[in-house]
Length: 304
DNA sequence: GTCCAGGTCGCGC
DNA sequence: GCGCGACATGGA
Image (cartoon, rainbow, N blue to C red; front, top):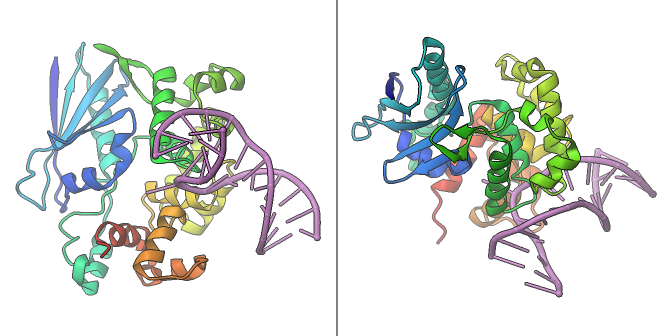
């Protein structure tokens, strides 16, 4: 059976750009489908069936407005709960409810390479759940991107739920799924290095107190308070906390890592060793939008 | 074989 | 509060 769902919205949204610039779609259970200008994802629905959804933009030639289209192939019929789950998770992944208008105002004032971003750029992909995004961020620390992809792949293969028509493709594991094994067994099945204990402990906390993490999505909590709460979690330092904040839809902090340091050193001709505070201050004028400013500063930069 | 990665922790000062 | 070595693993 096939189901197609259209998600309408009115804001400028550059779907294609989102897919191209953000590596998140390369991590399982996402797949980037460049030929279709789409991504797919394996997901378990409330009814229990595990399906593949293909998400694309039906109006890609008519920027800036996108018409998000979700196609699902499934073995049994979908009920109302499944459909609303699909819609809400896609809206979350694409951040359709985020308002980047204040950022675009700053971009227009800035001019130059910034002046065209308001055609719907800046909606960085995220996972349906905070758990998945937090695990993935931990798996980007002190490792190359190829290593991140491998570790996420192992996690999905070992602990995900299989797709109904292709058991080799699986969902991202729930915290409960990881808890079915002891830490010892977990470490043997997936090779996360010293990060295994961090991921396992995070899963345990999510399984025990999911509401504690859901509370982090509250937009009324000051970003600084969120950072403090995130830093209290083992395995999450300044870089990871700032990255997770972005995935929560808050762009006030810049994740300072080797990529950031290398970029600002080259573009702004900073001398080694990099003064971290001075580097971050380059984006001070962007206020609550520092992360997106840094992101586009990097992706629009062409080294001479 | 050797080095080290989109960092973080825990220690000693 | 700040500097520094250790940390698991596999790709480069």
